[in-house]
Amino acid sequence: MIRFRKDGTSSKRAAALACLLWAGATWAQGYPAKPITLVVPFAAGGPTDVVARILAGSMTRTLGQTVVVENKVGAGGTIAAAYTARATPDGYTFLIHHNGMATAPALYRKLSYRPLADFEYVSQVIDVPMTLVGRKDMPARDFRELMAYVKANGDKTNLAHAGLGAVSHLCGALLRQAMGASMTTVPYQGTGPAMNALLAGQVDLLCDQTTSTTPYIKAGSVKLYGVTTSTRLKTLPDTPTLAEQGLNGFHLVVWHGIYAPKGTPREAIDKFGAALRAALKDPAVAQRLAELGAVIPSDDKLTPAGLQSWLQEETKRYEPVIKAAGQFAD
Ligand code: ASP
Image (cartoon, rainbow, N blue to C red; front, side, top):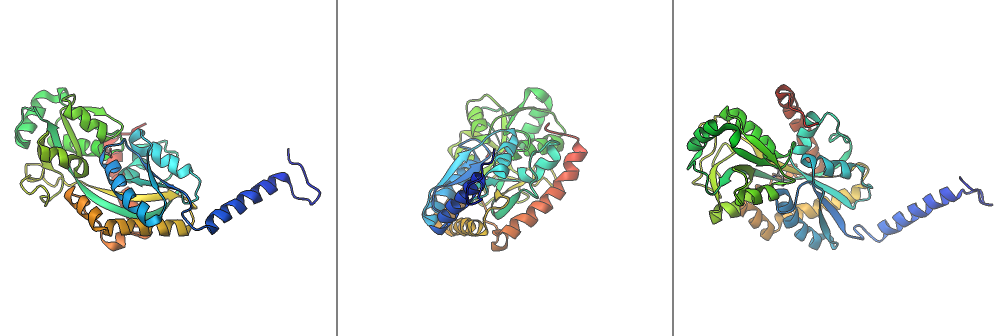
């Protein structure tokens, strides 16, 4: 019920006014006035989480407020994206996501958010190649032997991934198609836990970003079968590409973007974006990302327009491919 006061203002309107005044006061103190949440759609320890935490450290110093990484896992990243789309657009919630933002509309028939309409775009972040790795005691010594092994063992071969809509799933699907072989796929809530399963010998194969696999490759705790880019990587110069080893034209790079709920104030988008760009230019951050095989995109991509147009392009590119495959997640 709405009660009217003597001055004619309803108590509901007064409450709304108080809210506005409070919000105004917070903004008057200068943005950001409290910690900022950076939502990660996958489990801790995976590549998206690793990158978010590297960036959050540097961005916290620039912004003077903590950037808190929050893992909201499940459904190939769509739970985190839906959460961000519905969050209060006050400049205190952002999302880091990858190619999954472009594949979800075709993969999920009942998606509760629209990647091209329900967000503000902050910036692209980094591009990361993937590697195909196997458990240490896989009998196949190289990719050619692996192809023969998978063909002989078929569904007995397990490939771990981070759910439908995750790039590890996409990579696995492309691989199975290119190899003309079937495998059993095992979903996890991120490739962090998928990697733990691989290290424990519970699954056979995993396709994952170098930002996660590089330390395990260097330590020799996994078997490396190839990189997913069309040319070899500077960080793994002796490792052949999958294309070189018989999968003609195979090329998959993971791109990342930062999003905010639609209606987030421009000042917040600009400040968060500026802190991101400063982090990517921070020599310690840039060196760490380079060691992990990540590539920082050109300056024109590190902008709201750079992310928005790329997302539009990628959504258009994936839609017919996914529809033709007739594979839906729901
Ligand atoms: N690399 C994962 C993916 O396959 C996600 C993650 O755990 O960061 O999408």
